[in-house]
Length: 471
Image (cartoon, rainbow, N blue to C red; front, side, top):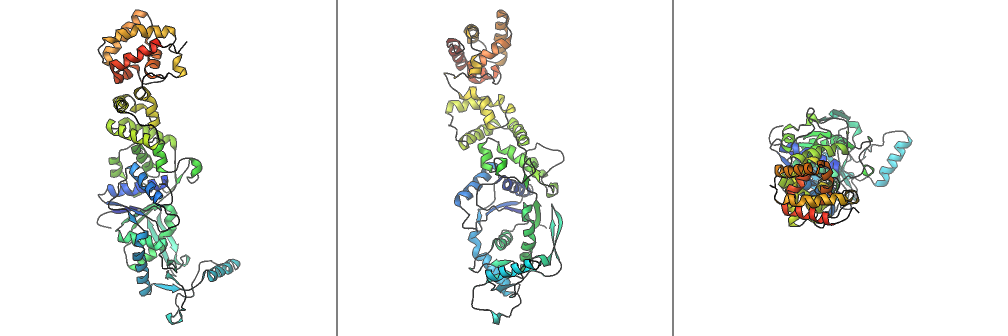
């Protein structure tokens, strides 16, 4: 196949963007973007009872969070109904489809009898080759004439060649008796009209491919390249479902996973490039290919996800990381930071980001920067503010007044103070953590002092020395 690569993601808007759907979208996005192609988005909203605008919004927001930008407008499948019906009518006029007047009751009776006789329940309509002169004035569906002999071979880039006997294919309905097109017809017409060259989707659609190929062949259209990817399973080896926890892309955003880490992890879920675990978007676009996709279901592993996310946070640009932290806080419904807190958080990122795996993790470590006086001291840290420790802080504070506010300057003052008092620096660290952050576990004391600056540091130390929380 020559020309520009065109892929598509075509979710049904009946709920959130499932994590499996997010990976399908990612694979299509990577394949197109890595080849200078187009990545299109189509909402398969033909099921009017189950499709909702809220679900469409949730899918679009999930894609936006993951950074999966699409080309052109979002296509609504429902809006193409007239075009889909036109194709069915064309096949009818060319004798490649036919009007079937069989009622639901007749079809059900045929199947009951076939079951009772141990025969195939595949329905063979008596109207397939009927003389149009015998057609009654009654409702009908339009069915495609499926090939009766030979085989259909799906040349799949992941599954290999999949052969289906044509006598296993039914004369699929194209148009219902009310004139509305079925999903299987709509998918093919849309993919053809949108110029889709590669159909990359879950392997639960593999059986559909043979039936959809009948329409391509009947219309004389080029087949797309098919790649049916295995589904995602939970750690227990069963298909991913609600019992495994979060399922929607937006749930993962609200749980605090960075989008870059999520993209990296999802790309590695069922696809590999040698032994590479951590890679950038640019590398993923360059490396991603269909032959790197495995045939077996991938297992979703939260620990691996966290590990990859941590690596991405560590190398993230500070401004971008700050922006995504604020977006996480909004998604999780956390109170917004004021301007001063936002500035301090940005200043603190250098000493936080290589130790955090998620945004809650990052904000926990950033507590000293986003809290304000008077510092609320947790019970564990308060034990480090007994009268002896408060005495140390009282004597240390004036020494810091004139210190050079650099790491070297602060270390020099602290070390000479510890020597003069004949105490180890560790003896001072606990009270300093409690005074500056109100916590027992914090980033390095020097990092906190550098981020907070002289005035805020001295004010917090004075507050702690004057306050007998540990008594």
